Image (cartoon, rainbow, N blue to C red; front, side, top):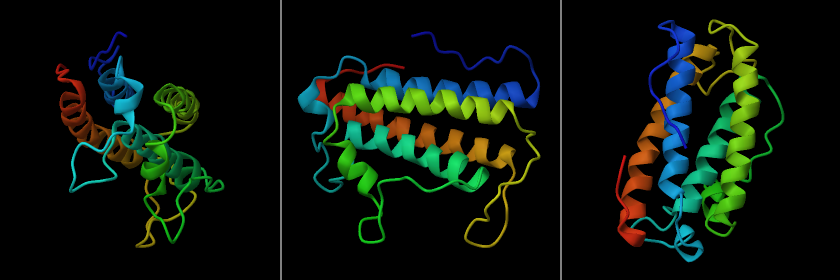
Length: 167
């Protein structure tokens, strides 16, 4: 996998899209070569939802929420429920990691098309909790932050699983 955080041009859109792809690629890289039994293994007793598979599932479904549900106004197809709001992390620990990564990649490709088809100033179809409708720029920045933060978690979990460290 070739990752880069250097956009092909210095404009805002290229920078945002490049950084989102960079943190996505980093998440995938953190999972490359992990043993199947380690993908859903709980490494931190105080955080039973924090698994490699659970985090990849979470990242996939967070993008679904922000792009498909909030920005485009589509149907929420996420696995969460009112009774189990973190279900995407729970089921992610049980799904084969290759399947999770393939779903994450497919959704990322679809979301790239969504971003390409809209202005950064376009407002989301649905408001957030406080009633504001965020623009695509904010959503991209939020997803960069969210994914980067969870990459730190993936890095720790991978080192605990098999000692692998790296970029």
